[in-house]
Amino acid sequence: MSKKSKKTGLEADLTRLEKIADQLESGETNLEASIELYEEGRKLGARCLQGLAELEARVKLVIEQTDGSLKTKDFDEEPDSRTN
View 1 (cartoon, rainbow, N blue to C red):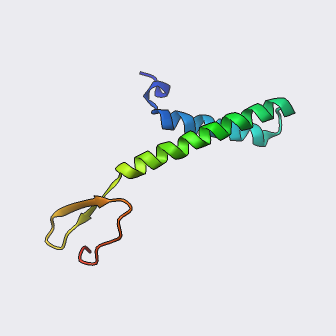
View 2 (cartoon, rainbow, N blue to C red):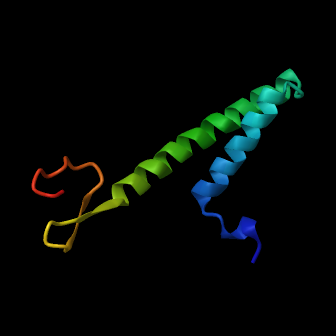
C-alpha cells in the first residue's frame, strides 16, 4: 500500500493545502491560476477546520490519579483540582 493511500481525508486535505500555499508563495503562478488555487485552498481550509473540530471532540485526556489508576475526561473539560 502506498503512503498516499494510507492518508486519511484530513491528512490528504492538509497536504494539498500545504502544496497550494507553497505554489501561491512561490509567485510562479499567473493571476487566474492563483485565484483558482486560493479558492481551492479556502474550501480545503474550511474542511480541515471541520475535521479538526470533529477530532478534537473525540480526544480524551488520560490522567493518572494519585492512587495510580487512570481516568479519562473530555479534552475541553476544566482540570479537576483533585487529579494531579
